[in-house]
Image (cartoon, rainbow, N blue to C red):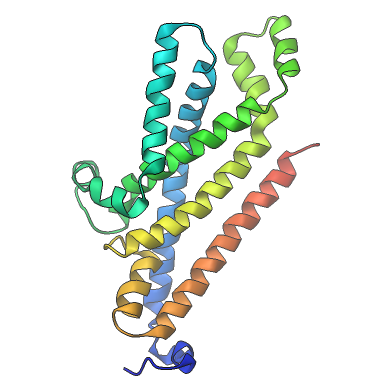
Length: 228
């Protein structure tokens, strides 16, 4: 197939549209499932980092150090390396090392630590005077978290999960290069390896549209939540 010149990008007759929509669905599915898991685990890790920071207790300091180490290590590993590193774990968790389902563990391990740091930052930005006022009125630790800390930081938390979701879409494309399915695999195997620039371009455009859609939904949610 001739892949020379810019005209090769616009030979849309070479695009298998059913395969493209199927790949787009896989990308969206991987992103949504991953972001739901990341939202839970990232939030818990971020809350743990926040609650254990600045403590004078040696045990609490040790816990903070362990959690921070876990977060920093997994944030530092390039995603394409992390996928390969976690292949045995993926095999145990989902029973496969290829396909959209097999990409979920790597996506979660890469994004949850990233979101945890965003959660920690959001909590630290809450006005200390608001927390002190609630505490002086007899609020328990759990009431401080669920009735003050989370509501006050909710716009930042939603903004953080939006940023994380967009990063995950990029990760799904990288995962596709080693058989995780989705638009990344379509662009790599049916596009790059098959010298079909039209598929590569089309898959890229669809990924960009998906990113814009997630960004719009995230921005819309933040505007509705933020009452300032």
